[in-house]
Length: 117
Image (cartoon, rainbow, N blue to C red; front, side, top):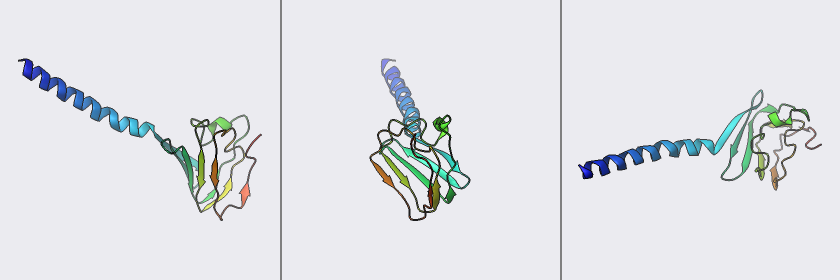
């Protein structure tokens, strides 16, 4: 009976680990819309925020800059990579990104809103 309990316990632990692993991977990634045809994706392992798609990014106001693409990662973002096709960066889109060390801009970029206060 003891051997059966050990095997059952090992199977339960294995199932728990397999359930938690995908959730941890999902928590490390986030994304969503940031323009009519633009999306953002944050990768925590590289601390990179990527903006991709075509067209203009939404504008944000100083008072609602917390709703910008980086709201939950503001103190972590080290790299912002804006892909070809993006034509504008929204006002206050990257306000208070204090850890930022690298910003990649595409040749398609035609307009930049206010990036800081």
